[in-house]
Image 1 (cartoon, rainbow, N blue to C red):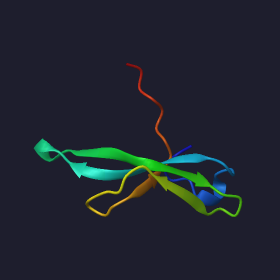
Image 2: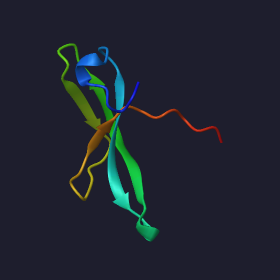
Image 3: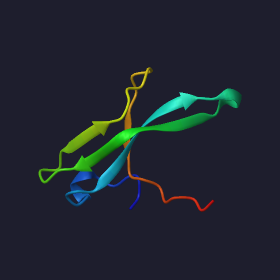
Image 4: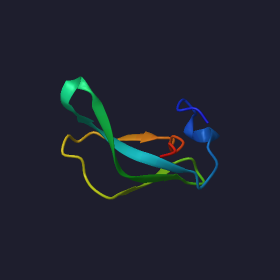
Length: 69
């Protein structure tokens, strides 16, 4: 499913990533995982954080496929 999917199109129980941007050298951005979100039956999100971003920014995203090592 694309990142542009609407929450209303996601089935109940779908797990999403909660991430925060962190600036890195060379002007690159690293996306640090801060927790998970789950789609509820009414289309709302339940968000579970493992940490709190110092920059105050969070983004909810559909997980990307894992890269093979």
